[in-house]
Amino acid sequence: MSTIESNVPNNLFVLKHKDLDVAMVAIDLTSGKIEHVLATYLPKELPVGCSEDSPNSILSWWESRAIPDSRRGIQQALNFLHEESNLSLMLSGYGLSLTDHYWMQPLGKELYWKNLNFYENTFSDELGLLLTDSEKIDINANISKFSPSSSVTGEMKKKWIIKNDIRYLMKLSANDYAQQAVNEVIATTLHKQSGWKNYVTYEVETTKIEGKEIPCSLNPLFTSTRYEFVSAYQLIKNYKIPNELSSYEAIIEQAVKLGMNENEVRNQLEYTIMTDFILTNVDRHFNNFGFLYDSEVGKLVAMAPIFDTGNSLFYATDIIPQKENLLDIRVNSFCKREADMLRYVKNNKCLNLDKLDGFPDKVQSLLLTYTDMPEKRAAEIKQTVVQKIEYLKLFQQGKKIWKKEKYW
Image 1 (cartoon, rainbow, N blue to C red):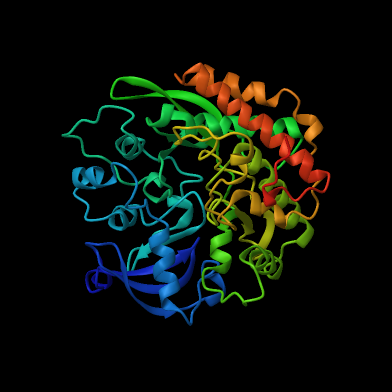
Image 2: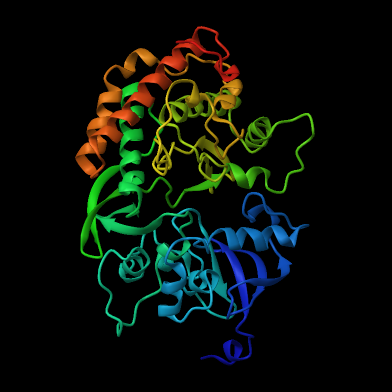
């Protein structure tokens, strides 16, 4: 170790954007939390939504990168790894991710993006196995924590894997017939059949949890060494939305300011609202859609492909609603009630419903093929898709279906 390195406090880190020095921060090595932002060198290179004038925005951004505390099994995994928190685990991998190009360099260490980033360099599957319980872990093993699986968000258990030199995200859940994984494939089927181009393609594989084979979803990476993902939440989390502006319009406004074409944004959001309605996706929150940021030109350049539709098709509901009750679904998105989301759709012909002939049958078939769901339940879920499509046909005819009138 050089004299310079030995004299540097080990809690100081440089927030890097690839190899650019963006800011200096002090991090509590036990908790992994940023304690202070000591200096900002390149304000324009800060993550979207962060500001030099608001150090707390950098603190909250850092915390939002980690595995959530609410993910099932995370505390047991941290205990096994002798880590204090999800943040300290993430720091073990320098905060690198497969979402963007940011990372933390310990002050005084000579490290380079090209040698570390997970886009171009391999990583061990040991941490991913532990975080998903997908294989038996040797309790005496020295598990490598250098993995993008330490910086992947969301409630479902998940990990990054490398398959044929392509990075895939694996998501799984042993609960609720493991339906969330299959729902992703159902959404893929819907987008493909409708002719939509900008979506993430999911496939189903199986993995073992506690000796039982369960379905899991796999989807390829949609970011790269050039393009980063910026969520809609990042655009508005530190933006004071005027009273006369909805969060929906605020996101569009901010996206346009950062380089997006307004029509492109509206078209995809409206299509997403309509297809989410068909699938009863109750969780299109502001981190579940967003944009691609070109790190070479420093602006948003495209909508991110549609992803994360697992919390759909009544996956966690015992009694499947029918008919007018389908217009009273509660969701976590722009509105509290799903039907009210349709108010934002100006071009209700952005989805060609004529192309969806036979799709409800495919929903039922996929559920029965990949889960042990009872046939009666699969048939009831299929029927909700049939009825949702009929409601959208009425919507396209000018009916304000959110008024919950009786149509049949």
